[in-house]
Picture 1 (cartoon, rainbow, N blue to C red):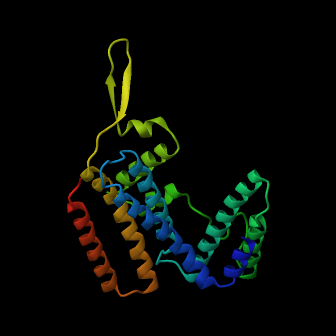
Picture 2 (tube, rainbow, N blue to C red; picture 1 turned 60 degrees about the horizontal axis):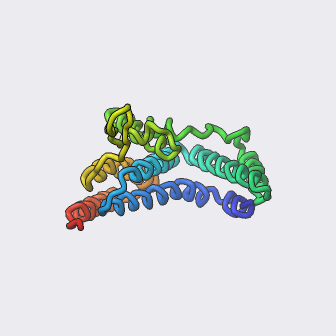
Picture 3 (spheres, rainbow, N blue to C red; picture 1 turned 120 degrees about the horizontal axis):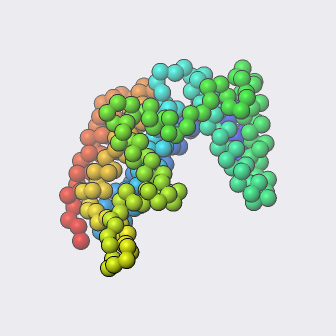
Length: 241
């Protein structure tokens, strides 16, 4: 891990591009997993967690590809992501009682930051916003309540919090004596598709920001989006067995 940090850290353009692209790859793969769920038998709880992952990663990429910041600020943000990643890896290494070079990797990032004139404290420069803050900011306006609702409910299900499960469940009395049965609420393909629509929107927004920042021809992006819409339409109209 130290070698990874050392090898890429001295190439700011490559390092920054990688930091912004990796969460897009993660979000895109989880969006593909959402499409795979639209085949019976449906799993009524799984899509909530996948949507949460898409929101989390798309919002992080959206922040990293902000077209309104200069190259140094984008580089600082990429360094922040690397520091956070290495610190999380170091936690696991300590729990396992091994040394995978993560702690040394953090120090390597700090040395690089100081060499480039950045202020290296716990994080470099502007800090690292939380996923909740980014999702709220990315979805400012009419879309924010839905985005936060999906994010919170998905987080609850992932972390085993009861109310997340209850949001998609039915409670029925069983006989007498105050005994109840809780079952996942039946859902169809269209239900999953509607729930997934927000995940599609936020990923498209993040990718559009990336293309704007890189100066890509907007017509290429428009053609890609239209193609994605057609493919989604074909998928939803496919006969189900």
